[in-house]
Length: 269
Image (cartoon, rainbow, N blue to C red):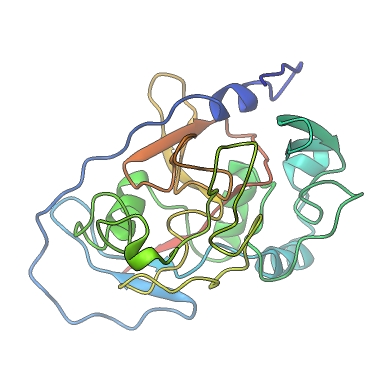
């Protein structure tokens, strides 16, 4: 299932690597302080001895959000500059380059357009950073992302607790069944889901496990690839398991894929 191209080729290799152990959880929380009011669309994440308090987007940045940014700035994404991007094809069970695939049409111009409430995908690290800067925000570090997703260190595996599927109800969007041959769609979504399709975690964050992978600003020391967290609708118990907070993947900064997006954070003044 691996293929090679003259450029952006490392995208494919990293996505078919086994996931490695994620960041270490800290159980040392700071003494409780009154929570400041969060900016619209964000939630307050209290800090600990290693991570100062910060605000985080409640949801992944949506197609509508990104469209507003593009309209205001006339920004052109890397996928648009390259003229193609990576799309997973169930018929061939492979990641393939698709001409014209970009944030407006994540699976290519012949497929349906991205819906406004879906997480924006087909954005590179540069694209995500450009949006964040425009919005007066930044991308989270891996440590910040894990601290927020773990409910300030309460849970090591899933944002909602210790069980993957509590009371038999799926709390997130991932692949149920033998990947990539059969998705039983037990979570109700055969692909990407609009944000807020599942209940928020205890701290008000949505989709920290599943739906789309999320860029972080943290680099993998050995390769200088960027760490991505959270898994996607293409992760299953037999492949990737990225929805488990302990897992991490790495991908080159110019990666654009139809299951990779981002959310932003902001410092607490």
